[in-house]
Each structure stands twice: as C-alpha cells, then as structure tokens.
Image 1 (spheres, rainbow, N blue to C red):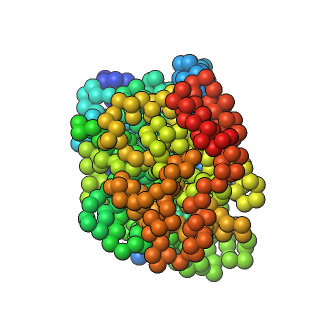
Image 2: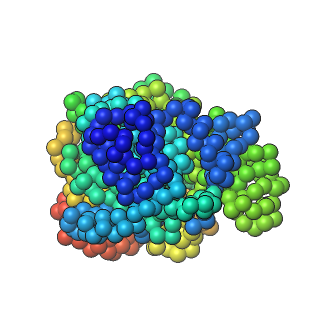
Image 3: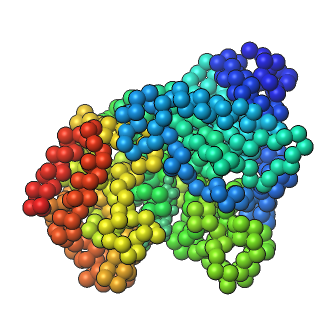
Length: 609
Ligand code: GTP
Ligand code: MN
Ligand code: MN
C-alpha cells in the first residue's frame, strides 16, 4: 500500500505507518466518504496550534484571554447537538439477545448498509484525519489502541486532551498490530464554494457499536460523548464486551486514593450515574483531620485481577471531560485549579467580556456575557448562560490532586467498590454488602432519580445498574453473571468490599440530610475502618449500616437527628422498593442470573415482604 492508493493523500512522506491493513481501511473509508484530503494526526504542539487556529478561523472556537485561561478555547455547539443521544445509540451484535433488553439493536449488516449510504460522500469539502490513540498508558503490557477517522478538527484537538494521541500510539500499533476501528463523521459535506457553519452536524445521528468486530461507527454529531470515540464508545461499550470475553471489567467508575492518618493508602472505586458526583468525589478534599485524598481517575475504571489475587484498576483516560455547571472554588477547588492552568476546550459555556468562561454556580457572576447560544446575557435574562450539560475538557496531568501513580500501567489495588445514585428516600447514607454476590445485587439494583424529576414525584426512579445503563456493550443479564463469576473465581479475602452510598437523601422539608462533598470523607473513613475491622456496624435486612457512634461526626455542622435519619433503614420504604426491583428484573428477563434472584429472595425474606 502506498499513499497513491489513498484518495486525497499525496506524497509518501505523509504516511507515517507501514501497517497495510490500516492503510487499506483508511483508503476504503476515504473512497467512501470522499474527503478533500487525508491527514495523519501526530499529536504535536504544532498540530494543536494549526488545528485550533483553523477552528478559530472557522468560527467554531474563540480563543480565551491568555491571562485568564492560557492556550484555551471555547467552542459552542449547535443547540441541537449538546449531549449523548441514547435513542440513537446502537449495539449491533450478531444476535439481538447479546445486545440485551437495555440497548437499541439492529442486525449488523443492515446497519452497515444503512450507514454506508449516509457515509457516501459525507466528508466532501473537508479533511479526514487519521487519529491514532491509546486508552491507558502506552507502556502497558497490552496497550489498548485505536484509530479514529474523523472529519472534525474539534474532535482531533479534544482527542489529544482526552487520550494518549498521535505518533506514539501509531508506533505502538506497529506494522501489523491490533487496534479498534472508530469511524466518525459530522455528516455535513460541503459543496464546491459552500460556506461552512461554526458547528457542522446532521439531524440524522447514529452512534453504533459492532462489539464482535470491536468497531465503532458514529455519524451526525460533534458532541463529546458521541464523537470522541475513545471515551464512552471504546472505553466502556466496546471495552465492556472485550472485558466479558477476557475476564476483566470496564466500568463507569472514579478511582480515588484515600490516605489515613497512619499514612496507609486505600484505593476506592465508585460507580454513580452521570451527574451524581463521580468527578466531585474523585477530587475530594477531606474535612476530617489527618485524612488526605488523591485522584486516580474520575469517570472510567478498567479492573482486572493481578498475580497477587487482588483487583487492580487503571484509569484509561488522559483528560477530564467534566460537567461545568456547579463546579466552583467551594464545591471542587481541584477542578478549578486544573482548569485555570489552561490548555482546555470548553463547550457550551458563557464567555465574559474579558474573555473568560462562566457558568451557573461559578463564583463572580458577571453583569454581562455572551451565552452559549451566542446571545447577550445578563443576570436578569432569566436564561442559562451555560447549557446544563456544558463541559470542560482539560489534561488530567494538570490536576493538583493527581496521585503520582495515576498513570501506572499496573493500576492500583482496589479495597472497596462503592455503588450509588440519587435517592431522596429509602437508601441510607452508606450500607455494606454482606458479601461479593450481595454487593453485585446492590450494583444491579442501583436506582437514581433524574434531577428534574426528583423534586416532587416519589418513586420515579430509573434503574441504572452499576451506573452502566447507557454504556453496556452486551446483555445486562450476562453482565451481572460476569460480575458474580469474577468473585466466585477469586480469593474471597482479597476481593474489594462492596458498599452502597447515597449522598442525596432528604428530610421532610426537602433539605439534604447529609452535607456531602468534602464531608463524604467521614463515610469513606467508616468504610476504611470496616475494611480494617475497626468500626462498628448494625446488621439490617439490607446490609450493615454504621452505628450512630461509629460514624465520625466530630465538628460536623449537621444535627445528630439528621444524621440518624440519613442512616435509617425504614422497612416500609424497602417493602415499597420490592415491586420496583421486581419490575426491573422482569425487564432484564431470561438472562437474570440465579445468584441475583437468590439475593432478591433472601432480601424479601429478611424484610418479611
Ligand atoms: P459524568 O461526568 O456525567 O459521568 O457525571 P459525574 O458523576 O462525574 O457527576 P458530577 O461529579 O459532575 O456531578 C455533579 C452533580 O452532583 C452536581 O450537581 C453536584 O452538585 C452534585 N453533587 C456531587 N457530590 C455531591 C454531594 O456529596 N452531595 C450533594 N448533595 N450533591 C453532590
Ligand atoms: Mn460519565
Ligand atoms: Mn464526571
């Protein structure tokens, strides 16, 4: 294969790989999509300069004030392209049953035909970038490589922040190495002489995964979760399918390092649904004296058993793609310090008159700014300056709370796994699972109230198993069985202990019973002391909860009554939960593992339900 056979690519100097199969794929996609030119991304500073410059020229990016946010850009999307599109996300396994009841499915060849028609000529007038990347450290024993083909410069620069991207990843793929194929197009070809828009995209969108082929096809959206294919598409949906085949776990989890006053480090992984506090907990600043915390990752954990029989977690990402609104110097100072160093891409936030960014909840509300839709905004406007799902995209290495071992390819040994969601009733502040299988049951039944629906309507809870509902690449019943099997085959004494937490329980007047954020360190302390067999707990039908004395509330600005209410196990509430779990398990259907059904039966029995 030479460059001459890749349409749009000229000169052998431009082909930085001899990987025949990769070049053939690039040629085949270029033939189908007809870009004006093909460029291999190398991940260099010069490339960043060139592409951000091009984006500024196109009106996609505005360069922020270098004194406020050095080397940073604001790119506001089309108002129709602001979030992941779950209704357009497909798992195209060969058999429908393997996608399971929680995913959209289409027969793979049918989907390929349909999308090939969409892709035909879809890059006309644009450049197609070949973006090699690696999820997790490049020097891992088995680095997880991928190549994204995209016609979006926004995607190329964002992938450089979020992943180990460029020549080093291409070198790892080598002359014949395996990589995940990830094809992305905005679906917005330009006719000869046609002017571009700042945020090209298409009303027709498909975010498609072929798990058996380890392949991703995305069309029509430029938004992060739909277009930065290394993140949710590869590191969760495709990786979960790989993990199922190979005996490991790809999870929607933060990874935290907690250090006790005795200087002992504990690594904790936690799965909460989107917008339920992962990034906040990952960067926590403990309020209790002597305890410290450091960050390993804030969104995704890949976990596998080490030779010593312990479960090790790796953060496959290289950047944060965090929710902006609500992030401020009080709620998350580490995130603010990370952002302030610059080298960031902001999407759908407001821009102040002095060229800085602003969003709801940030200190220093300005008197005037340009909102995410490009309109003049003042505090009286009555509209949001930033979209509720606006994001900052910034290198993890800049975060002051990063643990030194955050990019160690070995990963970190996990002592505790936390599941949690947003529940204003029923679920106590913290509950310890009786054993691994009970912990899997807890994860399998995680429910969370959507923020908007949360006020008022009791009982409208969406089940989000292990916070993976939108990210599972295969059948959810098989997924539960996989979790159970991993525990069965492990040395039980070395397995992480499992806990269920809920920062969001409310009192009669709707106030939060627990102050949350940095104060969550008190719960983490109890968890660590349970691991060390030092803290007391009470056996309840749902698991072990702290005694009033066991939870350290010294200096806490909350009444003892509120804490007791946050910890309470109310059997009437739990009896009301049973039919909701039953409904969910009916939906899971034929593949619900016996182990999970056994746990459910035992819970009902303990509750007398
Ligand atoms: P994704 O990045 O979308 O996967 O979500 P995430 O889990 O990282 O969510 P994030 O940390 O951005 O969630 C933030 C939301 O949770 C904000 O509305 C916070 O105010 C709220 N939040 C985080 N921690 C706490 C807490 O301890 N107590 C309360 N009451 N709210 C919290
Ligand atoms: Mn997430
Ligand atoms: Mn997050």
